[in-house]
Image (tube, rainbow, N blue to C red):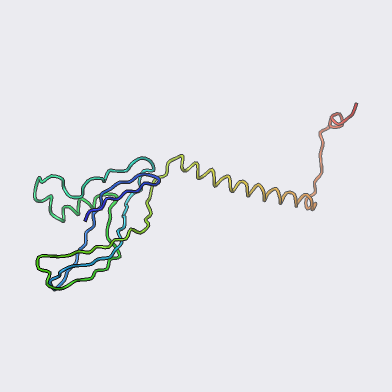
Length: 175
């Protein structure tokens, strides 16, 4: 089965996904119902900006150059080399037995759970995040330091005196 996935928030990712569902039964089946999660698997972080559409190509070969290209193991091996792949996980299967004749019905119910995508943040994103965090900590530390300093000096916990420069009497002298 083929899926076209698009992520359009911080950076744009467009890819054509593939899901392989396999089931074995000892009796002839008229149909199969499957429920599962279509999950995204990622091996390496993505760049933070731009459109990442390197895998917006068909998972199946586009030309018929040789019969070996159309073998399932060859298609899955090529697909597995990608950085981002899709797969059906947490699946449940119900068999429908009976005289189906030439008809086989596949009912596929897929849920797209929330996924985490790894990206390499840009320098601007790092600086913006760092500045906000630095500023919030700076305000808190400055306020606490001011409160502690005021309490220490108003309670006279440390001996303190005011020292004026030697010629300070000239500065405050009125004419």
